[in-house]
Image 1 (cartoon, helix red, strand yellow):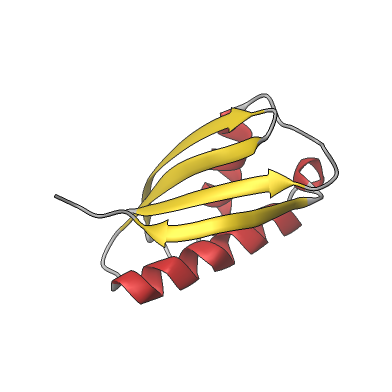
Image 2 (image 1 turned 180 degrees about the horizontal axis):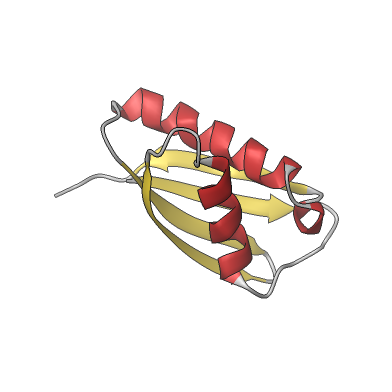
Length: 92
């Protein structure tokens, strides 16, 4: 599981977490590594957890960064968003 935090420098908040989750899913269509997405949005930005299959921790973090970039580039509604944090969540 990878924890991601995004923010929007231009102050464009999104009210629907499904918009960002769908953008991640579309960005992953080619590779099919994304099993599940949980997103929470607020006026300050968004935070979520991406569940990926079959990846080493470092590769999973890099893949999440790439997914975020592709998701933002593919949606004008997400213009100005940037990835603030991307880290593995400890699994216990």
